[in-house]
Amino acid sequence: MKVSETFIPTLREVPGDAIIVSHRLMLRAAMIRKLSNGLFAYLPLGLRSFRKVENIIREEMDAIGSLEIKPTVVIPGELWKESGRWEAMGEALLRVKNRLDSDFVVSPTAEEAFTAIVRDELSSYRQLPLSLYQINTKYRDEVRPRYGVMRGREFVMKDAYSYHTNDESLDETYQKMGRAYRRIFKRCGLTVIPVRADSGAMGGTGSEEFMVESEIGDNTLLLCAGNSVASSAGNSVASSAGNSVASSACGYAANVEKAACKPDYTVPASIEAAKAAAVSIPALEKIDTPHVKTIEELCGFLKTDAKKFIKTLIYKAVNVELDLSKAPGCAKLVQRKLAPDAPLVYPEAFFAVTIRGDLDVNEVKLAAILKAAEVMLAADTDVERITGAPVGFAGPVGLTSVPVIADETVTAMSDAVAGALAKDLHYTHVAYGRDFSPWLVTDVRTVVAGDRCPVCGEALYEKKGNELGHIFKLGYKYTKSMRVSYLDENGKSHTPTMGCYGIGLDRTLASAIEEHHDEQGIIWPITIAPFHVIIVPIKYDGAVKTAADSIAAELGKKGIEVLLDDRNERPGVKFNDADLIGIPYRVVVGDKNLAGDTPRVEIKRRAEKENRLVELTKAAEELTELVHRELAELNR
Ligand code: ATP
Ligand code: MG
Figure 1 (cartoon, rainbow, N blue to C red):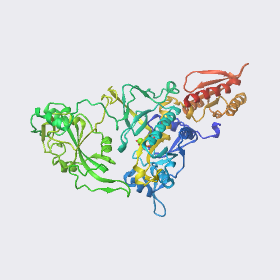
Figure 2 (figure 1 turned 90 degrees about the vertical axis):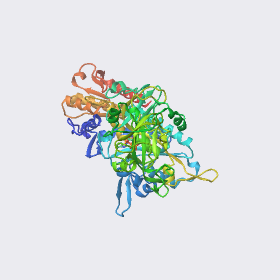
Figure 3 (figure 1 turned 60 degrees about the horizontal axis):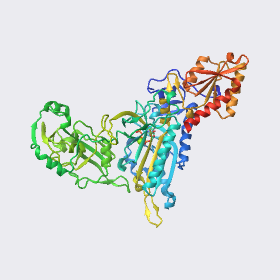
Figure 4 (figure 1 turned 120 degrees about the horizontal axis):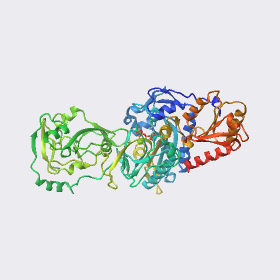
């Protein structure tokens, strides 16, 4: 293809709101243009790369037997009402009405649509397992779309959904997806870190996220010090071929939302044992702590450290599925269904969460334990109502108005300090088991760098990451609420179990640029480059034109994708653009090298500094071999 015949309006300057490299380079290299906040159009060059990512994903999905279908993007609101997400999804869901006043949803994800399709066709266990996918437009009304296509409002996702008669079958497909994802990212030239992720109510190993390391990442990852993640940003030369999945000695890598750690304390065998051990601790004592509210203030006041305090926070949880019928203070809580076949939930419930004073509560873990849609710190007025004291004096002793959830660290504390549910008062000598018994003891701790790996005990360290893909065992959430069933070999009706698996295409493409670029521009992994070779004639005229055309034609015949810069521009301009758009191989055709007995052209790999001369007659053959070799390396 000739540059003059396509549309590559490269830019020297970029708008100030483009902060990250991929956003800047995608604009400058004329891959994308902004239509509005979070809405981007792909121009021809960007679309070519986008389609390559798409094809890699499609090939790998097909290879594991997932079947592509194409549902609509606009989905009947009824389906979302059935699943309960019409209400639960909140503001991110774009709801629209048609001329008949019917409700619709612009798909942010498609569990409902796929499940409705499967429900209508499923009758027998013989049809399962079934794995379906689409590569299709999604819309999420993100509060803060940013970083270009990294977090857009409209984007394209490959989303797959699988249906099974049993957990083993679900696990088999889940594992296959995990392997396919590793191949997809490797083929796109990306170094990903697969991490354990929050799996909501599913627990266990039911969720894995595929992260790329990123300074602007929204996720915090905790990795075992044995983990050898290739440092990557910018140095594409080193990492363009050998990259793939970051490996680890012990293998532990988790999203902070899920991360656990080896206890740095000793847990009593039982609450009775804790109570018995407390005989050696002085009796509970109420002390005056005037104007002392925060842990730091208390530390100063009592001249001790935060590990001695039981921190107590009052949380509000929304749509709690966990059974609270026997929980303190919950007898009068009302329950309701978000949809006719959805489970009963408590629309609103309050909890006191206690944890050792030097630690923070992990709200994602808390929400998973409560099977709640959301948890948030309670408003001051709620705290005052629940604790009977101003904010700052909550504590577990004598607190009966709400269930007390204790992080396990609290059970290992003896002779602790805690709020006394009254203004300017704290308790000292607080002992778990003797002075209070929580409703639930669990792990709600936010793990931080330096905590011990739960697998091998090495220190954990942190990295920021961006999520490119996610695989998830959903279980029965949608198949139950949407009443999907099949008959087993004995004619008995059952509900299938389900998995879902997503990859963001736009974010994958942008992340490849984040990992592979230099000062001059993009350095495409060849598998997703818009073209394999760019031919730059110094002046597209005479013998130079003839030579450039002949190389282009020959390469074209061999299936190599060629961009020919036929513009009447200065060579410097053409070289800069070639570097900017990052085509893996550049061929420069000039008068000087063509003259003489053996006409030559100059070949340069974008990732390398040096160029070399090859004979004109051998150029196409050599380039073909180079391109094929590099493609094979990444696609291996
Ligand atoms: P995030 O936490 O980044 O908002 P998510 O967990 O909500 O993502 P999923 O629902 O798991 O995302 O969607 C699967 C994939 O879709 C993500 O891994 C990501 O690659 C992509 N994706 C999600 N939201 C966006 C967005 N706003 N813009 C671009 N890609 C997105
Ligand atoms: Mg996710």
